[in-house]
Length: 266
Length: 217
Image 1: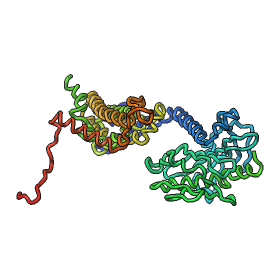
Image 2: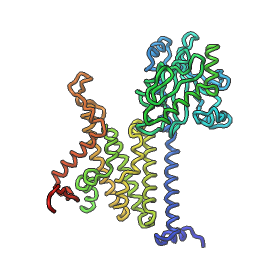
Image 3: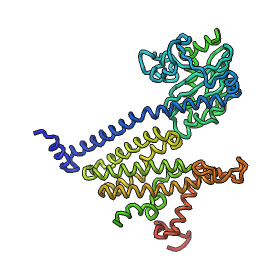
Image 4: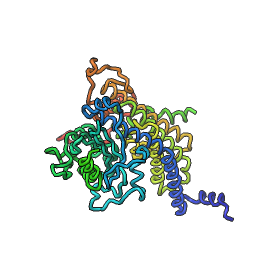
């Protein structure tokens, strides 16, 4: 009685203005299309992520190249990349016994066992959760810290911004800021990714004398060492960058780690 | 056979989607700063056009008239997402440069136009030929503009230096304007003028005529 072939033929034979046919065709087309899109997306994901990872590394390398004198110091030390260490964010201490290369901060942030919810009053970067651990990239010479690079992220206008913030040995002066990932409006917010805008960052100071995090992206022209020019037409993206840095440099982010570095050194 | 062939060759110049029908101009302006992006965009659009025309033509008898545009858009949009994902996986650098424009193929009037005007009423074979022809017609113009803009804007074609620029102690002063969107407008305008002077049947009769002020009607 319920032969699928007969049902299918009967469905196709219905007139095109029949209500069942209209809904049926709409649902079928949507279903088949979504299956097609999902299959492509899932199968191609590893390849795409490999490209993204390679790009992140290339950006890191470019950032180091852009820092004056950094390459020569590294050549002198005989290293060709920064040292990666894992940091426990709440205590600010290094974690040993885990391979930093296998740690993925993004996956960890969505795993309840490896992350904590950010209290809403502290969550200026609107992240929701953050991983317990975070990788940091260090360059040291004879036990003296020369450069520390911190991965930071936060909500922009319509996407999650991810960036690398390089701080000089005083842990206050920005050596460089590189946006590694963004999906903001092309031509407006997406300009955070341009070298011209990122060139505004070196030399800025993230904290004032008392250690308060004061760095901000302002509307129009910034004045003084704590202000960076905003991007006109992209206030929310500019605010996103400010909030991202305030969160990650604050007490709930890398604050304890930076404080410990200041007190005890490496 | 010859009739079938005209489906393919017609849109190249006689019915060219960009220069005659003025469709798909937005992407033609945006992605033609270099030949490589123009080529990839052309390939992406042609693939989407062929796939969507074939699919729509295949199920054309069963697309209810009241939701036909929605069905067409869903099919076109899924093809675009698939092509975009493939580009991101296999041509990452180029897909970065094309940014949103691959995604915007969904809104390209050319794709929707061919689906609605041709694929809805014709069998699969002619629909694919028509789609391929229109895709190639679009590609032809994009590649032309891309070549001109890259050559005169940077002195190179596909990144290979042809005219040695002044900055590398040559003689060629790159024309900065060629890298900006307005130059694509000028080039398309010049192409339309050239094509319509050669094939004058393409010239449209003006819908409105100018009236001299003060003249008696």
